[in-house]
Image (tube, rainbow, N blue to C red):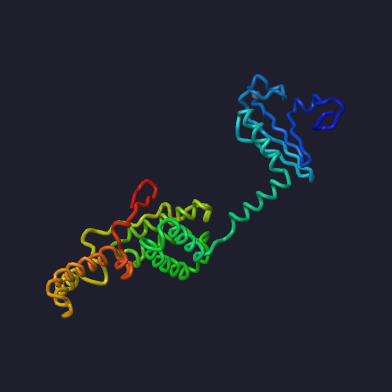
Length: 284
Ligand SMILES: [Zn+2]
């Protein structure tokens, strides 16, 4: 008995010639639509020419469809047809539906950032960059709330582009480094399928001009601040240690002014813990 059409012969001529593949879920039939100038134009069972391959699908529930497989390769057409038949299996279709549902699940900005923090903690521990990401996450979440964005998938390139051009960013000397962090975070989320397309990919933060002055201080104010460090040495410090105090405070304030990090980040800063992170081909 033909396993496809249940006729008497083991595989009837019709099924063998029409390349039907069949299961209890339905059947698929890849076939060739010959071009007018094909030398096999009159042979509907000839499939090895370079004419477009199509498929006819009949599902057990009654649904029928016919469309181009966008290939001229008969081997590829048969492979695609087999895949379509497998996908009709209720168990596989069910698993696929669950996967698609999971992929389409909306992830809140807070949960997404926590995912990034968890990944950071797993990789580096809670020191080093972790507190910096924690602080930056709060800035990111505040911005999202202001924009009325609840889920990562709702973020549009235009919103991120506007943010990158806002004074909140342009006043930062460290804006290209900080924006680079966002690029890494979005690349991570996109790799996980949240979102499906990376909205920040094409948006770069300009490097600040060389004469940029870190807000809110003018150049004169910064000079005066640095010059006054020596006048702030507490009396309790041993006279032999006073120059160390000045050196350390100068380094601390220079770090704050040039990197734009928070006080606690600067206190916890350990240069030897800096690791390379990549954005595309660029190491930041
Ligand atoms: Zn042909």
